[in-house]
Length: 312
Image (cartoon, rainbow, N blue to C red; front, side, top):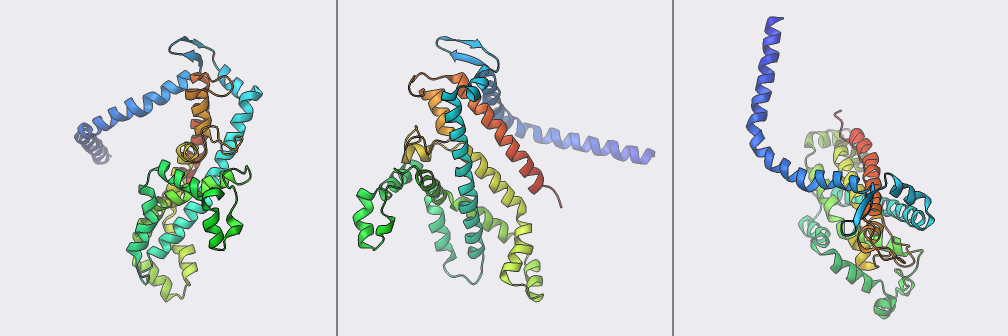
């Protein structure tokens, strides 16, 4: 017993010494995180309990902003509409961007494939472009007045329609453009994960006579499960904060008729720019929208982390 206690004490002393060794390197990052991440988050939660602005003075109203957001039709209608659009925006990315990312990564890690470096570059190039640039270019391509004659010459007249002007297709078009631009990031992450799989597993599957689909489904996919979960989390968080792609292709009102309105554009209109018809920003109500978004993200992120990042 005495020996075990001494061993335990020595381990604790060793852990403390390691922590003290690394502490000087952690302090700058910790200070940066507190100043620019933790404190603004906490201050935003505090701001959601007030009304007014710094210029005219703030008044503590408790949960009145949250109540207004869900009970006043002027705000609740816009909020639930933006929330539903953001979920749809996320599921499009999850199904199109991430699934195609796995497919492309599987093809790019196939040793028999020719020109892999070229295809990797082609897939990743859109990521390096500014969102405003790609949004404006795709806005022109999807405009039947600009692209219509060219599409007609190619025999693709069926595709000539006002994709961004039709409420039924506008959000899908914006979502697919966003998928196209950011496809390279999940693809490269999946490529890195697949390349880390030991060849012993793949050779054993080949010896057992497993097909390519069986090898992917029963060996590759389970082994890259943590990466799949992490990419799903990043997609979820980024999509609930999406703003620039809608701003570039439509406007901050989520045209046409709020059909592309997301949580990011709603927050901007309410908390920063001021929402029609009043046009006066309400930082407290905007902070309430941000606070609810934060808790929604926690509800989605935490279970996904527990289910995909656990040790087998």
